[in-house]
Image (cartoon, rainbow, N blue to C red; front, side, top):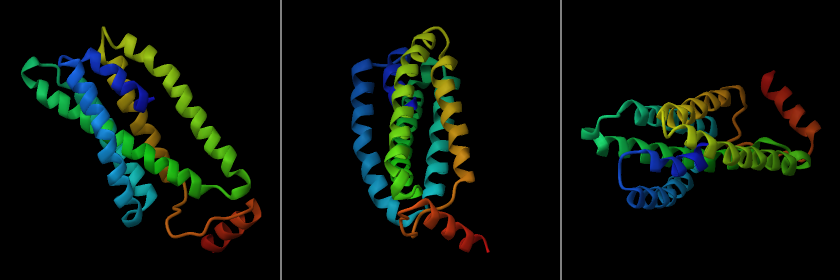
Length: 179
């Protein structure tokens, strides 16, 4: 929802639409580069948690800063929130592939893709509601990504683990790690 909604919502913010759309598009490249270097050095859970929280905080900061004197700060919040959401999404896709065994991996990645499509369908409505009150767009985006980022604490870490082929193999690994 955040990945599709934030670029749509820049029209509701008080700065140049063309500049902000261009900067949002350009921020996806550094997000991919950061993901490339980060994925080998940091754990998946920590990366997802940090970038989801940063995106949520900056998105809510975008709503709180409403004074026209602080347009640059608001634009910075929006850009950093989108950059963090892009990085979080890149790590999430890698984490999803590593989290599930081969026999259900395609289904799991398809479910992530369906969640992305559902978010893409809901975000234009939130952006439309956000024309009158920014809390309905950037506030909801920030709260949503922050809360979803907290759920990663319930998942196992996958960095450095071998990929399982079957559910039985995955259950065996978890029982060995628990004992």
